[in-house]
Amino acid sequence: MDSIQSPIAASALQHKNLEPLLKSWQIGQLLIGRVQDKTASGNLLLQVSGQKMVAASDVAVQKGAVLMLQVTGLNPSPSLKIVHNPVLNTPASTNALEGQLQVLIPRQGSVAAPLLALIDPIQSANILSLAGLKTADLERLFKNIPPLNLLSDPKVLQQAVRDSGFFLEAELARLVLSGGVLTNTDLKASLLRLLFRLEQVLGRSRGLASGAHPPQSLVELEEELKGALATITLNQVAASQRDESDGHTWLFDMPFRYADSVYGLTITILRENSSDGELENTMDWKVLLSMSLPKLGDIEADLFLSGRKVSVVMYAQLQHTADRLKEQLPRLRNGLESHGLDVSVLLAHRGQRSTEVAKTQWTLSVDIKA
View 1 (cartoon, one colour):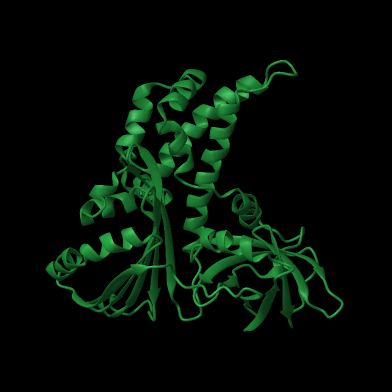
View 2 (spheres, one colour; view 1 turned 60 degrees about the horizontal axis):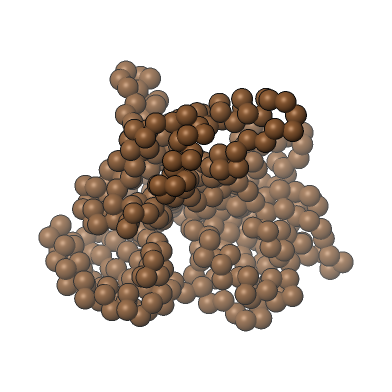
């Protein structure tokens, strides 16, 4: 396997812009990298997530090539792998899926964003009026968004994952074979229905005499819906990619209700050191959780499971949040042990997952499959 080692000089990527960029990346996420140019020394000038990066490469990659990249690691430094061979990124050979990915990747947005607009009483009343929706439509939607305090219940969390939109197409395929009706709980299906209704209204508005402008609130909601749907779809596509050790990654962006608002919980599940014939209870699993809440700040957790042995390390941006997490550790230990797990490590402290960002240079590793 050839690789690109990409030292990012401070002049190319300002340190103040690096932290929010890294925080926006999740393991398993798909990104687009475009080869903008080649330097005199043969290095590549890449643009990833709107930032320019200089990459040294022994691989012949043409100027203008679009690389599909997947985030494979954030610690100790971010790493990406190319999931589409750059040779395929030519007008003559670009297939329908690659074309769709190039549209979806830059469009991906927060899954919670359209829900945040709809849960606000003033905004939702305006949107309901303009889009011809009923209050019952929104009530049905938010009934299926779980409140944060219930997500500690394994059954509620499991159902939230099932309804996250990740399994919509698989459920539709099952219904085609076995019959039945799709429930109204799937998030992706609900967002698609809402987008369809919205585009009908906007289509009529845009079809009026020239000079007419559709309501800005509906246009913004349309973009937020498309962004949320793009993220869910890309999470589904990313799950089809396997790494060299036959590992697997699943990424879920799940909205939840908290204090009369909507926030997002990101869950990344990694299956490591596994093979198709290996028993599930002998696999190594890693689960990464992250969310941000008002007054509590950013909260992250890493869970490691090997057989029945589990370790949990939690990180809090704010000290008082870290203190509250420490107070709950005995309760968490009891809950894990009640499910037959052997707790090895259980920690909570102030800080965040280490990405070891240097002040002058950041190394981005990009692997290219031969």
